[in-house]
Amino acid sequence: MSTTATPTIGVFDSGFGGLTVLRALIRRMPAARYIFLGDTARLPYGSKSQRTIARYAAESARFLVDEQKAEFLVIACNTASALALDAIEQAVPVPVLGVIEPGAAAARAASQSGDVLVVATEATVHSHAYAAACQARGLRALEKACPLLVPLVEEGWTEHPVTVEVIEIYLNELRAEAAAAGLKPDTLVLGCTHYPLLRPLFERAVRSGVKVIDSAESAAAAAVELLGDRATAASSGLVAETRVRCFATDSVEKFERLGSRFLDRSVGRVELVDLGG
Amino acid sequence: MSTTATPTIGVFDSGFGGLTVLRALIRRMPAARYIFLGDTARLPYGSKSQRTIARYAAESARFLVDEQKAEFLVIACNTASALALDAIEQAVPVPVLGVIEPGAAAARAASQSGDVLVVATEATVHSHAYAAACQARGLRALEKACPLLVPLVEEGWTEHPVTVEVIEIYLNELRAEAAAAGLKPDTLVLGCTHYPLLRPLFERAVRSGVKVIDSAESAAAAAVELLGDRATAASSGLVAETRVRCFATDSVEKFERLGSRFLDRSVGRVELVDLGG
Image (tube, each protein chain N blue to C red):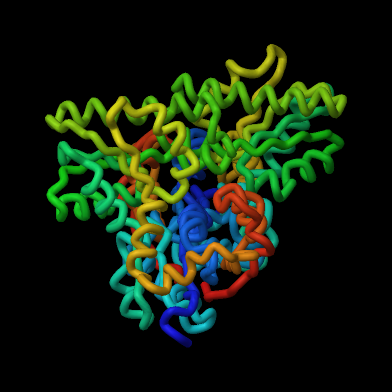
């Protein structure tokens, strides 16, 4: 295969939130071929030990590369990006991109004050992966777990007054913590693959001058950069239909029901795959 | 061991919500010995297939009975009660009690109209286990999934205005559905082990004359009845300290942090146990 042929891109998540990353990839590279795997039988990764997560993520990566012939992997899962990127890179012989580094890089590019806020799930915050990636770029980051947001998105309340109120409560707490720490944040990173669906609410809720970074968009932009010429080939305007296959390890019903909302198009028939217990 | 000695009771849940059932058991039988197992490494059961849930639940039951010498099992997990009670009964040679039948029996005793509302998680509603158990008792039951309530409880917002509003929204939807179906419900079953912490909010939110059934309390009352003389021995007023041991299959941190709120006393040191992948 020529190196400028359109690539086969594997996208991996513990659930289906990573479909927002797939959506951002498709928007940039509609002519690529995509294989998405949601390890739904073993989610949530966030409550599991690093060793267990690394094993699950490596098995999933091998499925995408060895069986589905992905030539490039995007880990569209914050927990796996934080805790299993090394294990995945060791498990497969293709380039691997997580969501955390691109998010931190976009925050670095956006921030003038050098102070950044990060909202994410409990597991991601607990890993402090965003804080570390920001710190490595000379940023000070304050992270906050927002455990109600994923269920609000999954309930479909992406424009509901309750969600507006919950976001306001979380941001007020975060702003108070930032003020107490003497930070002057001018950038807010949405560090969870569910949150792009709440981006309009976040953009309305932040103080004027604060930029909202969508880590799904940042990851897709980083993928284009890494793929170089092959991304150019995949960005061709003449695409009848993007080729997408979705796999899940269990319970495809919720995936099919909610997935199209995340992907902003039909996920088609989700295929069941068994990666073991 | 004499049959009137205080019993060793195993309590099983996929997570730690079942600690509300343990709390209700302790209140009735403070002199019993309790072994609680939360299969946290493999939660949530709700998104998994029946075969997988049955295997997990049977393994957990064998740990409680074979290794921890439980003489009686309470399955303090709606999903496992709905989908794996038979598998558990076949796996262990002790009496097994779920949470669904006692909840339905309490609804039968409470309802005059014969029409009952059930609020539960998505997985429990999807199983229609409460509807079936109610129907078997001549009740008409309308079930509603309330996926935001578990995260609200885990966020500690058990008296928060947002939670009051979310409960009001869910109950309004449920009442509209009931009216459309021609039902005159006079009983509301809290069909999730997290919901006892929201019982005061539910009692304020229901229309006057509607009784709230807490399935954790119903399960504990049914356990007392099944244990007979041994329950009497365990109800002794002279108890220095109830003997409770808690086990989890992964990530004891959240269990220890939130568990005491569910149990209404310290969960002590939670012990990690490996039941396999």
